[in-house]
Length: 39
Image (cartoon, rainbow, N blue to C red):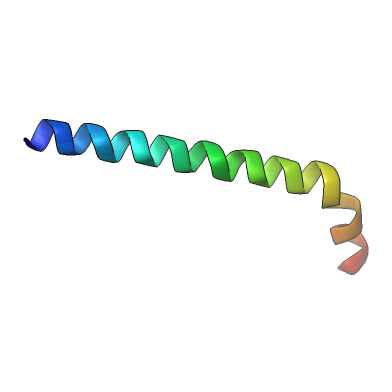
């Protein structure tokens, strides 16, 4: 049904958002100084 489809899309979006947020914070924490030096 449409409601199930929307729920699935919402779940997938939230998982991807969490993963991207984790990746961004990991990069900032571990590679931030190195990336600053490259600029």
